[in-house]
Image (cartoon, rainbow, N blue to C red; front, side):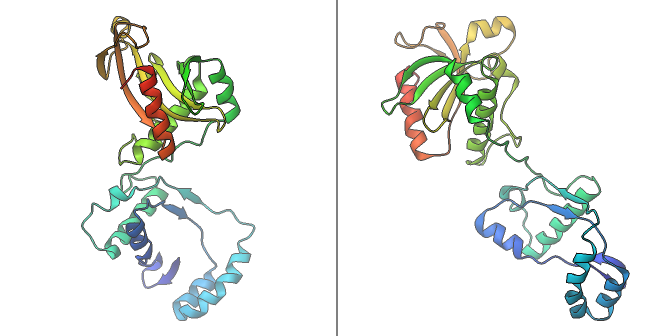
Amino acid sequence: MSRFGAKGIKDGAWQSGFVKLGRATRAPVLPVYMGGRNSLFFYAISFLARPLSTLWLVREMFKQSHNAVDLRVGRAVPFEHYNVMDVSATQLAQLFRKHVYRIARNARPVFDSTETIAPPENRQLLRQELAASELLGTTPDGKQILLCTMAQAPCAMREIGRLRELSFRSVGEGTGLPRDIDRFDRDYLQLLLWDPEELEIAGAYRLGDAAALLRSGAGVPCTVIRCSASAPAWSPTCAAGWSWVAVSSSHATRAATAWIICGWE
């Protein structure tokens, strides 16, 4: 909180407790700037008797009840981005202070950040789209192995992109965007594992007809593999890659089972 001093009304040095807590828990730090000013009487008291000004804060809070406050929330700074700096917790706290005030001025921030992962898609819309998708089989515990495209199931594609980003961030990767979707998803097939009871996607695998992709100019940004005789016969040669499993140990088992059933090992 800003107070009146020899250099005017300025924010004091930040305490380092939040940095120590963030390092201990490997948590991201969310920068939030809250603008606004208290009354001149408050700043006068804070200059003469700081403990008394702290007691006066309650009155200041109610006096501001009808005023607007400039609140700006920045992007979360991942643990990996701020922990690489070889500085003390106190120095890091001051760097975060500078980071927050740069957000207030729309200036370039101090730390690289990532966007918040998109919220989950509507479960009922997902169910409607996937009910119209091609059913390839089921797992022993009743999960459905489905095949769809972005055009056929746009809501499912957004959810796949969200879960990709969530899964890859859990191992220190990811795009840093709300969803991990690129230009190739438009032309590829999405092989996915759907839980019809929990209404959630447990994992997915992107694949396509390599020859058709190359002819159309879509490109093949992944491994090209030769299908076995028992695999789905979309084409003798398939482009496959960009697989992920939802962040859950039970989902990991289900997804691995689905790929084996489909012939993709």
